[in-house]
Image (cartoon, rainbow, N blue to C red; front, top):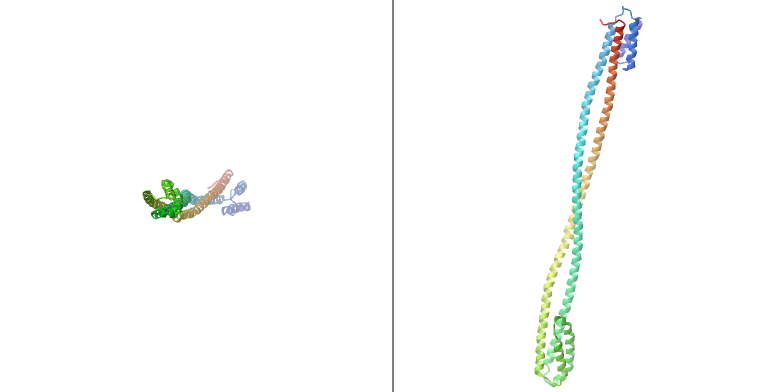
Length: 354
């Protein structure tokens, strides 16, 4: 019997020192030993040593339970700090992403407006260039018309000068006969040139008719000849006045057209050399800003995903830690209950504390 008691005490001592596994089966194992011991023990055996071992073992389990609870509480505080840290990160990243998205949209909208301005500027440049070419063609056409009309006046005045000089040489019938062919030739020239000026309301037919009649006469009607010469001089002055008016009108109109052409050219130069390059530079700048913000936005989204993953991993680890903690506490409670059951078994065997 002494050997049996000694083995029981050794078993309790090893369990108390943590050498034996702290499982339900271990408790039940030494509980069975104690029950058997209570059934065969003699009254001479000092069971107080056994009660002291049980108390020491119970105290050890309580201490381990308290240590586990304390350590769990510390870990819980750290867990809350970690969760708060990651939640703060997530909130910050979400706010940053929201602001960055607004900034990117604003820059994109501004870039779109600049692109619209650039498109309109290119259209304006196209329209202005087209107008410039049309105006330039109009100026060249007007100049060609003016030159033709001016030369028509000049040629007709020259023919009139020739006719006036020729008629001034007619003094008698002899000179008339000598100049008759020349007069006819000049009359035909006058007809041809004055006909070109009919649109200017130059009434030349009576004059040509008078010259033709003079060339056909065999006598000189000096009075009639002088009237023709006077009419030619009047016509000549009228043509000179018309030519001068044509020149003045052309000069005025040409200056106006040239001013318009200069304004169009200035507009073309401003659009082509200033506005378009400026808009292109602004668009390039906006593209750079958008690219930089998108890079920051992508980094923020990556950081947000990492923070959310870290939060989820932390929460999952805590769920596992809590499950492990609850299991361990339950095991300690089972150990303490088993010790209490063992003491009750001793009491049932008539063994009590002293």
